[in-house]
Length: 198
Image (cartoon, rainbow, N blue to C red; front, side):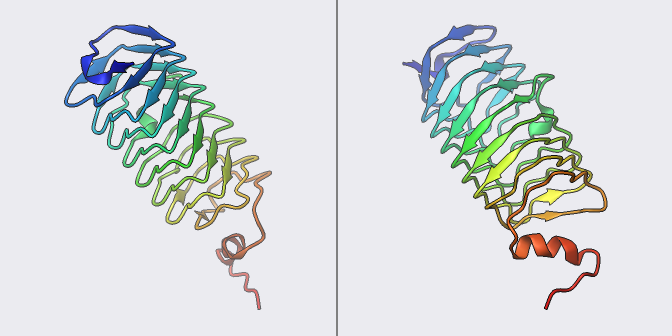
């Protein structure tokens, strides 16, 4: 098992396991292929141009990390924290079909991010900004979306069943094929148009 604090720039790692804390280091142009990060802390980390492909993050903390031009392709994230992360700064490959389960992504911004088939299961996404985001075929299952902002967002074929607390600006979002649980949150969307229910 390698310690994140021992890494340098421009390194390539395949099928390795990492733990520990990145600390105050900035990593540039790193490549990780099929690697596992367990209990790793990249809190306030600076990962410039890093490429993570088919990696697994378990019990990690990337809160407030600067992910400028970084890419996560086919990665899974389990019980990890990404509080305050600006996902819209990712590189061209961005978030290629990520799978988040039981993660905390509160106060993050996905503004202007583009991807399809994202999966969020039992995640906390409170006060997250999804404005101007393309999220086609994304699935939110049993997620807390309290205060999340969806404005000028492409939500075609998005599944929000079982999730709660969301508010969607139906006048600016593309919503064809959106699936909702028929509950108070779904009915609240219609109240934007003055429709009342007794």
